[in-house]
Structures are given as structure tokens and as C-alpha cells.
Image (cartoon, rainbow, N blue to C red):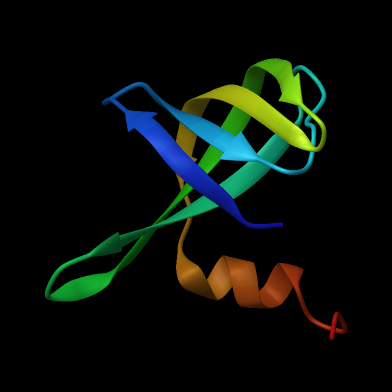
Length: 79
């Protein structure tokens, strides 16, 4: 699902999303970089707060950098 970055630090990211995330749920964010390939970071949900109908504030910590080839392998068979 798509989300908007609300804030970002060296340790984690704050997101606004239409989809809730469970505490300790893992997911990957794609961060665009000017003049370079995007950066993919594995995250773990620290908190998820409902702000309104289908709007959630999610706080997550970064757990690892993910190589793009690992994402392609994980998504094989998904269309």
C-alpha cells in the first residue's frame, strides 16, 4: 500500500497511511534519492494511531537496508 512520509530520521520514519499496521509488523519503504537509485529500508511498526476514517499515523523504526534484488525475489509470482 502507498503512504506519505510525515517525518524521517536516522532511526525511523513517520507515515500517513490509509491502511493500519499492527505493532511489530515488518514492511519495506522505498525512499527516492536524487541522482541515484531508490533506497529500500526494512521497517518495524512501533505504533499506529487512527486519525480519522481510513487515515492512520504510523511510527516505524528502520531495521535493515534491503537490496532491490531481494524485493524482486520476495515478490515472484505476485502480480
